[in-house]
Image (cartoon, rainbow, N blue to C red):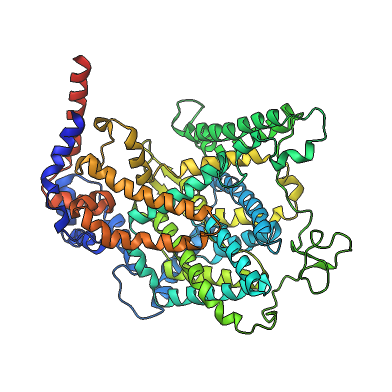
Length: 634
């Protein structure tokens, strides 16, 4: 009964849905009169639409090309002036207790993927890039970006799509019969050039077409990767589920011990993973608990939630259950390049390729760009795969920045899309020359950084964010220090780190509207939360929109997971944008797309123009409550 009532409320608006142009530009038309009507709107609606927040949103649009027409290269200068040039000192001296807590949490969130990604890099590149290279890249890029980057909330790191692309480049280099690091360096230098061009010509202005539709598909994909890899990936032996397989490689070191039980190890690993996640969430919610002496102590418990959970379950593993062997990180013994050469030519790897001889030594840190095996055309040919790599890096960075700088997050220190495109391009170029992996905006880690620095109300809405460079700097300084204390890092059980990954993946789902609508498939329609897209869009139409996103999400996940087709991953991400711009307006009306895909300010403006007021939501809640009470009584 309730589902049909809700659908009837939207029927009158839907009949002409195919006749409207609902491109992102059309959606932006709704916002054009905002400044003219701002004061009367605030009075009429009783909304909290502060001048400062709206002005900041306008600045956000201008600074990455949404409405700004300017000379080439001017965007880089403007970005620098409004971020580093204005806020650098304030962001470097705002040290407090939260800074320490967030830094330790993100240190574990950064160093564990660096080591695990490094181990996977070693497999897909035949040890040319390994854990040491990943740790070194994470450390220096993080410190450099914390000091000179424009948006320090962002965390750089290794990602699955970029790792998969490195595997494709390795296979391509073998087919071309050129050294992998040389070929990788030339591709990376081309990517750097493309990034410089994108920054200079303000190509970030096209990111306006990456609306919530694209952002949230990509964000859910990255969150899902963290969650699935923590619990058990169906495509690789990663995750706590695989400990229940006797053939898992983590059991090999103990198979000769009579008292070793892989089942006991698997069960303890499951407890450590789920326990770390559960305790972290419980402690994080302590801020609004009535327990403990005062709000200061409760806030401190919340800030140190993840760090406390890691320490608790690491001690539990090493002290209480020390007789049960759990997997530990496979960290390198020393800081040196991963590739150990058999001979002076450094074409084969010790000991895999030459177990009977003494190793010649490690490969040099700086890549020889002239080592082309006589194929002098390779540097020009590298420009072609570099286009795909550029699309991947550019969209990964742009979408992550888009998500971080959403107006609801209350960030005040400006944006630097063009400037940061330049900075990241520079870091990719340096890493390519040193044989280090390329780092991009790590979506889940960046969002967790944002949430950890944010102050929220009881409804989970952002009140403000501590915008600082110190956490980013301290995190990566600790990663750098860990290079000289690798045996200490080895004390943390891998299942505990799986728990951290699971926590980060689940925590990043909270603000994802796409995920919220996925859960509505399993809800009674009358119990849907009060949102614009549940009030003004028919349930069947909302589910259709969600299904389209879900199909794209599944395609992206499977393309990423199969190495033979993973090179197409950036193309699929890019395809989400024209699908939104050209296909969805033929399926949905402009009103439906405003409710499902527009910013909150555009939705409020639409309500003003169509005669809605702020009491509608209250009335709907009261109506629903009355009907539910009547149903209960009957």
